[in-house]
Length: 602
Image (cartoon, rainbow, N blue to C red; front, side, top):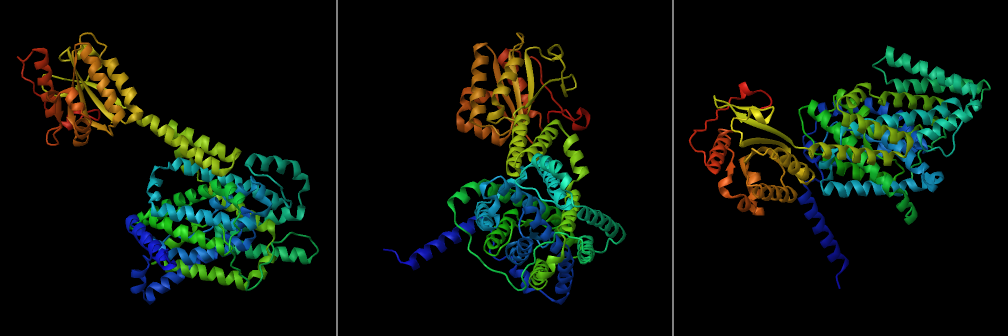
């Protein structure tokens, strides 16, 4: 019987093997720390301070969005900020609570029977998010993020922003909604209860809007959210002292920060697993896009799977230390970049400052009016609506427009995790629809030996020979359409030989091989011939391995030449004339890309 030591060794061996195969590094920060010095420390400390002044009020706001006590946002920002640099490949990305993940938590819990007990179940939710991210990193799932359309992300963030704004309006008006999970439900309930508006809270909210706009426009060097929060909290305290009743946030006990093991509940796991997977997916999309953007600006590169591991560890730790979902924050990461952060250590400074403030200034949080924080959350939500990106997504192509409308509409009508899944599914379906429609253009050649696109069959140089240039994908989704298009071309009774130029045809598979075999046999039944020209090595390999080249005939297959793209077509034309018994004319094809224009088959 194996001992515990043997099992531990086996687990360690499997873990090392997985790590080696995944290409991940357990401690990529080590080389940075070895050469760390005072100038780096000063710049990182400055960047960390700047980010902390923004992150502290943001963390409370995001907790409010998620329907959690504000300390969950503070603790999450501190824990993620401390752990993520150990595993991250980026020196700019700041990990912690974000608006998108916060509203996903709100949506997930409000649509479930567990909604009233979210503080008890947030731990197991975060643990699932962390496990999904960590396992995904080892299997290099983040590399697939590039296939997620930016239109989906834009529509999702826009929908989340609208839901954020709608959720906070009741708090800004001084009343509370119960059980509203979607945008439609929130709007309906808000309209029904608008008569419950608390006028002092409304007045304070309007004053907060004015103060925020004033500080944001006149004092751009100041952290406008933090300054507005302090100033309007003082105003709220003065109103309370004057006898005006306001609702304030709950105080956070000074020096109290408990570590707890997540509640293991099979029913909770079953109900929250889909939402946890959606949050993990969103975390990867957010962090990868932010990290790549900032890395490109700095002339650097990041490993999205390494960032995914960093997120996995951060969310797992947050599950035990009272946090909330951690993802890459766009606003804090950009501020960190612009503040001159030199290493990931800047995240440590930010995290330490947030933790110290949460533990030392916790009781002061009880002096922040809910209406004030609600208005600041609304301002954050408004800032997420990017008109330029929406315009690009809506106007660029019909596919982008449809994807944007479906994703945004579902984000407003249904739960956000369903919206992002639906958006990704629609974008992939539309992509496959376009990819499964290869372009077929018929060419001929003139007396000068140049290929040109013909408009009708009557303009062929040789009425019995058709040169068809195939452009695009020939995988299983396109095979049937490709076969039907070629059959349509071959309906001309005078046509005896079809030359398929496959120079720009990609991703042939078993389905396309079967379609080509059917086409060859169909043409032969009609006493006609098929010739392939311009084939690349990948195409030849598929023909050879499948045995299709034997059915076609090796004499009817001509490889492409990089040095002269059209030599294979010239040889194919000679073969066509031989099949027709017409060998009296010499075939010459010369190709000049500068003369033939953008529709050239080369």
